[in-house]
Length: 106
Image 1: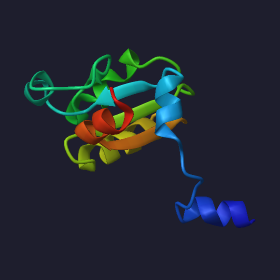
Image 2 (image 1 turned 90 degrees about the vertical axis):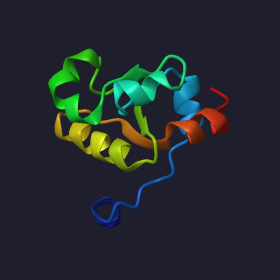
Image 3 (image 1 turned 120 degrees about the vertical axis):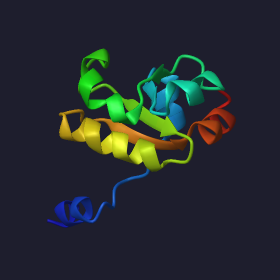
């Protein structure tokens, strides 16, 4: 019962994004192609948030860990919602691509 209430309120255990990255999580950068070309995390996939629903097939395994990122964290939060509504179960908002890159030395 308590776990159900926590999930409803969005209270979940803190996820170690670094561990997910070290274990091969897919990083999906949801900025535009132009933004992505100006700098990005090596190995990330670029699918702009407005094209994400149409490009779901580019992502493999609905249970595999995915970390979304963008410029500030707003679009990546939307992307997380899109992926979750399409059956992806292990999706995490990484926020800003720059902070992810700095924090995890990517």
